[in-house]
Length: 200
Length: 205
Image (cartoon, rainbow over all chains, first blue to last red; front, side, top):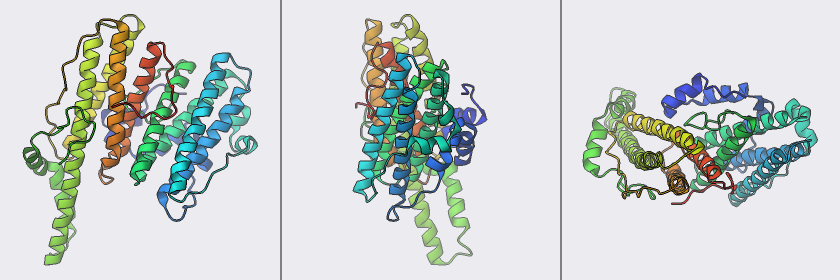
């Protein structure tokens, strides 16, 4: 967790137009969410019927479903009620996001997605397998939200379908609110930058 | 040129022709012209025509994007007015929050102005909308801010797909939109309400 603005964030704060894809990928790779991202967000997806919009949405849906599974597992840890409630709410929201996006993707010819198993996620991410405490859970939640925000940030430039652009925008706003809640629970600045890029 | 739906006041750029001339005279548009025509070889008529068509298309997209960003400037001006108005009405921890959010709104404005200038445009004076009524309590003040943040989110969600892909503004503008949603969460919490009551955040125009 890093509440201090890095060079990319400072540059973006001066001018959001200066944000570059490479800088963002670097930032995400530096974040702990890197353990999850390569396989769930950044890996190239099989293009559904050749429609790149659908392929991108399917990738985002897979990450939403994975996030929900992880939040469910984290909520089973020995936690205070407030943290458990927060994780349960995040899980439900991620499932809602997946449902909304999947509905749009199916309309355009995308295939239904199944949530991954917790075991497969634990194999891919030591952070998921090793989470034991409230701090572990919240830091992981922060990384997940940051990675998702990055995914939606990127999607805004890549998508071409108007409806998908607007739906991903509404979900991105929700992920921003999640990030605020997680940062608050961790005890760091909830709004560290006027330009939400996804680092927590 | 049509101002974006949901833009407070509607007319983001009020003198279309004047703004267009300013935009086309901007150095950014000149750079586009140089880039597009420079690669057209020694200049067959068809190549020159193609370059001119591309230039026209590029300048129209830049103009349209500048108009949309001008609408966003109106939204940010409204937010700035609201936070300036409510600063003295909010007491306790809420006052610090209001000051912090207001500073972020100013950062949005600065970035939008720079982006419009980078497109070769000149930001028009902000359309600040109807006069605001001074709130009588902290709760009323926070509710006013919350309502205005909702309007801002709705504006940005509506505007994002209208931005051209070529100018690569969608993602940066989305970072502003998301920050407004974050403000909304903090304002809701300050009001004693759930910070993230819905999984889909559309704002309310």
